[in-house]
Length: 199
Image 1 (tube, rainbow, N blue to C red):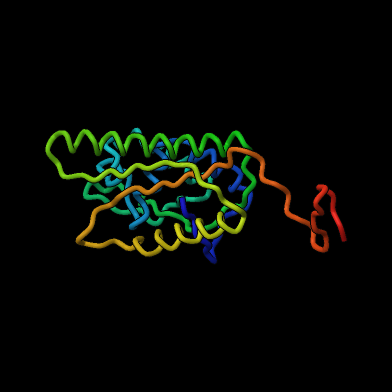
Image 2: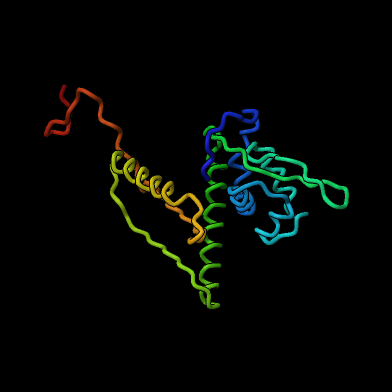
């Protein structure tokens, strides 16, 4: 989830629940559906395949977290008004607990799993879909990890803008150290052959 900085930030107190709010696959889908512009609950319901009354609770959770807001109240022919929601593009601080972060990441994986399953089922039904899944073990120094992240961010930026000739595709890269990283060497010291250090 890329939440970009904005000059109009919500109350910092509301940031406490960002990871918790996004720790649900449906709320991730609602948040993504608002990426290309404001939507009402009725419009969002068409995108996520659920009736509007099933979405209000989740939209309130996103509002409470400060990452979604009401952009306008749109008049309806009946004389009533409907809320139109939009994303608040801002960067939340990293104050989430390990449990909240784990719940958020689990939801991201659930959404990705559902997308992969849907793509394979659609392909079996005769649609033309592409699914690319690859895994492997990498040996990454701190510099290598920084290069990897930079390269992936450049790819995301390159293909972020909607292209009429393309289709939406979910991209997920997960890098997890399988062992503790060595502490950075202190400046002015070097290892001798016996394993000690010299100045």
